[in-house]
Length: 349
Image (tube, rainbow, N blue to C red; front, side, top):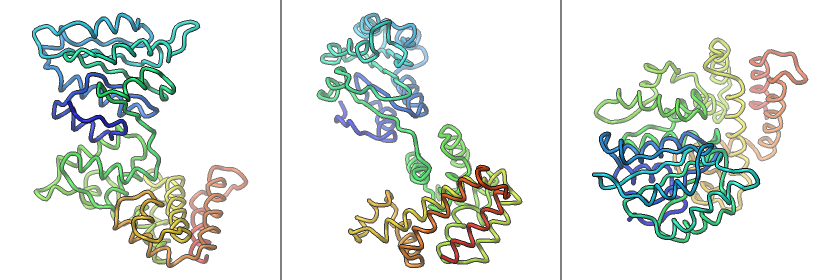
């Protein structure tokens, strides 16, 4: 039995499953469906062979589920196999008239106290969390299972997520390449990880995804992207800023203004946090800007020396204004003209 971790990450949990270290009960909940679907499929694929699934895999959907029958299925013994898997999908739809979802799922409470060792129960609850469910309290208090919460990924978390995913398959990627992928694909995790999987097939003996590899195979320019734009603003390199913005305007499909504004907002918000943080140690600053990359921190610290605290405050205000106007509110200017005006204000702050 693996050690209990109520706050286990997707990558750690998936590695456990691949190593066939199974928990008796998995509750996969949250707003991001990708992780829930991926983990439930991973459990089935690793716990049972294709031949074993005919008699040892039970999949029930919430809208048709009778929780008591699901529990009875969990208490059955596997047929000519080491284990059986019972999956309750779309558990958020298990509520009955005048009965809450929590009350329905709390019927698992007593089973969770003493689950059958040869059964793996997987409960998939999408769209939110099971708050206040006694069943979950029982599960967290024991070593009989794990509760994994799949949160929506925010834009600023994407580069770190790309690095974690690449590392989980024993490859490497630098910060620039990670930022390029995050900016280009966005928060569609299925597509993002799919693009990474394609690149992993093409890496050389050094097992590294580089900006050049991305440019050749995905079509993102390694010289004209938001990572390079951030670097240009960091160094107050006006020529490079406007050169990149010209490229963006000529290639709007791959360089939407809303993504660039969002990136710049995150960048200057981080500069403001660095400038106003009481804890100036690297550890303290990393916690403030939510990064584990010393390279990233070094870049931001250098940029923070180029912009005063007042400048950062003003720039964040300019970014908010540009975001509103680029969406057609209070301005008829072309969005890329707005971006150039924004660049001028930033460079002269």
